[in-house]
Structures are given as C-alpha cells and as structure tokens.
Image (cartoon, rainbow, N blue to C red):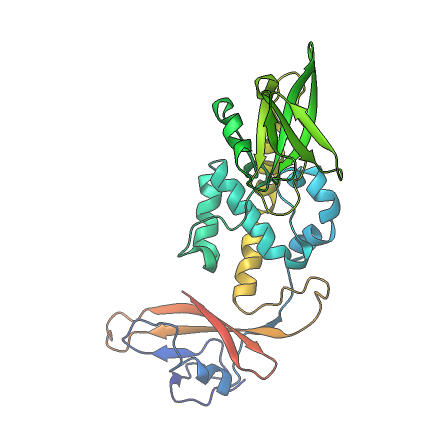
Length: 308
C-alpha cells in the first residue's frame, strides 16, 4: 500500500512502506488529529474481524455442565442471556467476599464499569440467607415484614425438622408462647416455640427463597462450604484471563452475541509504524508503535488503542 499523506516520511527505497515513519518531537497520544490519516491512506498491517475467543466461547457453550462441575450454581445463577457481564459480576462478587484481592484488582483495572465504582453488582446466594440471633427470634415475628424464614425446629426428643414459613401477617401470631406462621402450602401453617428453634435464617434476597441444604445435627447451612468455595476458586483461576480479554474485546466495540459468534459487525484494523524525534538530529532513535482501530461496517471508528 502507498501512503499519500505528507504527515509521514517514506523511508523505504522501493516506495512501499515496511513501516511508515512519523516525524514529530511530541509525545504520541491517541487522538483524532493524526490517526484518521491511516484510514484515509488505507495503510494497515492487517485486518482482524471481530470474534470471541474460542476458550471463552466454550465456557458459554458448556455452561450447563461447568456450573455444576465447579459448583458455581451453589453461589450464583449466571444468566446466559447476559453471559459476559453476569459471569464477570459473579467473579468480582465472589472475589470480594472471599478476599481474592488479586482477582478483584484485575477486574477493576481491566473492566471499565468497575474502574470508578468498585461495589459488587450481584448478591451471592450465601448473602441471601441471614442467620438471625437467638435473642431476636420473637422480634422477627412480632411485626409483619413479608419475609420468608427457614428454621430447624425441635419437634421431639433429639428430632429436628426443617421448615419454611413466611411472616406475611395472615396467620403470624403468638398464643401461649407458641408462634403460628403460614407456610408455602395454601391455608397451611406451622406452629413452634422459639425456645425450640436451633437455628433461624431470614431470606433477604429477591423473589422466591432458594432452599439450601441444612445439617440436621448442627443447624448450619452446608452449602457454600470450604470445598465448594475451593471449586469455584479453581474455575476463576482457569477462566479469569479469558473473561478479562473478552471484556476488553467487547469494550473496544466487539460483539457479545455468543449465539452467533461468526457474525461480523465490527473489524479491527492494525497499523504498525515508527516515530523519530525530529529535533534530536544527533541521536536518531525510532520508537515502534502499534495502533488498533475498531471500526463498524461503515468504517466509522468505534474505539482505538495505541501501544508502544
């Protein structure tokens, strides 16, 4: 390709450009006063059409099995219709909760929407069930709050039952130290003495409560244990690089349509060139740059990056 613009110097004897050379004494920044010449003069090292990385695509395609294999579903339901954002938000929330500081730092540095706002975007399932202090059991039921409760209740000597009820004011009442709460079966209720409750959890999530597994001997929720955490951490270790690269690709104008990964909506044009300091005539040093422009089908620039 020929470079017509006088903005660059032809340093090739063949009138072709190995790399065009830009002569300036200024620090080179990405701006609209000079990179348009690259498009105008049709000089490029190569064109790459937008397409998700194959590794990330496999995460999308195999998510139905991966979420079980690595126990992600125990902590959060990643939605495939918004896969990249939801997966990124889950990884960040998990990293913050379980103090994976290197992971959360990488996301803040590479994902634009986290650079200014570092707060987790999604709530993990472990944060939806709030363990209620034993001293506050009666207070939880004395006023209607439309909350759901999961509790382990002693109904016979050494025998516990797991119950799900709601404090919606329909049946919630206390008679002779016995509470009556409506269950999720129509016109059904459960009766209990708060003194016999081994553990009580309040659902603070949205929608219908998701029932975890409770150990009948200890009264503790057995989901979200250390083994399950370790499996999720393994998945994050495997996937973080691909997730970050995919975020960067989409931020540069790439398509996140994983149902149609071969759909070409954008392309990346790569430009390699050199720069010399025109004021430094004694020590001529060339700096090599690579610029990548993401353009749409009308060749309108969506985004760009410049690497020295």
